[in-house]
Length: 363
Image 1 (cartoon, rainbow, N blue to C red):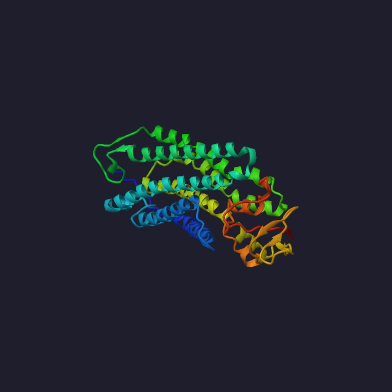
Image 2 (cartoon, one colour):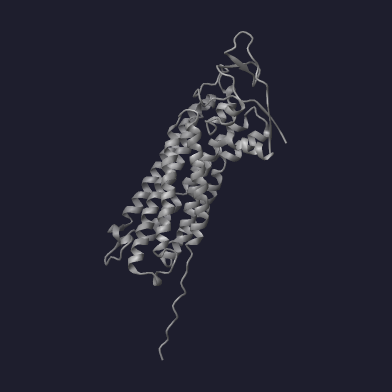
């Protein structure tokens, strides 16, 4: 009598990826779109980091579409229940998505670093150190980015063996990929530095505590991405164990969450003014605008006060203009609150994006 072990039951775990990543994809694209809209109104004043984040968001959304296509061809199921033709298509999509993920994640970090570079003018004597540190982080990110691409394309030869059965395949030893995964853990340090660098500036702001807490929360969202990057390192040991169609779902999920939270963290601070307005409408915060004083000598030049002394503006600001301030991000909170970082007492920035506010916050 022959013993026949029963076939393992089929799985369908792709939904564990598609549902949470789909929700975050909508949130990320919405925030990125809102960020770009604020940069185009009332007049275009796009910066380098804005263009970079647009490319990153487009790649991130394309990744999700690619994973949805892979799911239609068996990703998340056991290979025993998927035809060879569908397996080939699924693995091709996984390879393409991984390549886009590497590029997108690098662009998200680079966009945040470029945004912080624009704050260097408010660091005073530390400006040189600030710029050097950020440029060093961009350089480290570039090296890791190149390393990941080299590993992706040259880990196994021929390359088509990644998605197609090939009789003779030569691959690097598995410990190399695991060691490189741990070596790339340096990016955890990069994420942590990018998320916490602005805190030193925010801590010294001459602003009410609630406003400083709000700014910190918006800018420290990147710490969530840092935590995920640390959590997923041990998962790299399991990616080559078991059925590749189903065991890659968990690591792919955490990789995608790291990227999406990084994208959200890069866009949220750019919507600071809109978030303040939302909290005001919800009754979480109440804002009392100080009265704008009118110059006695000229009806065209209006003055207003945000500190001892006064600043000049050519047009009388309105509440609607302040609410729709179009540069309220990593640089806008400097525009709104860093007037004291210049010895001359005048903050120089894009004319359409500079709207000075002076607010008292209470519950």
